[in-house]
Image 1 (tube, rainbow, N blue to C red):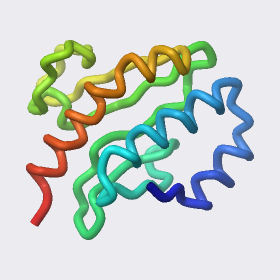
Image 2: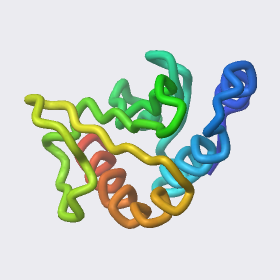
Image 3: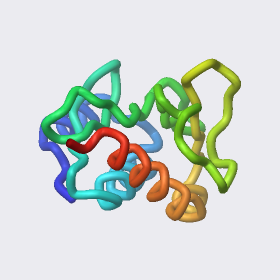
Length: 122
């Protein structure tokens, strides 16, 4: 798991009230598979598969009481834990207001990352 220093600098500048939770979610996602990398795209930390243009998702920074993980392919990823919400054709989201909520979702997040990587890895 390697955080991107540019993402750290971006988040430092934003001074979001849920920075601790954002960093915890970043670490959880990056720790799920070493082939994930992060960058700033679409206004927040975005996670993609190294060597591809495939994006797992973006942490949106709009809310001040919760953070949202936006998954553009979420509807097609297995979600046996029922973590993802939404009814759009492709997009699903997961919202977190605390470290405890992220920790409770760790296994579900790892399964989503594993499924995403399996689909997009060469």
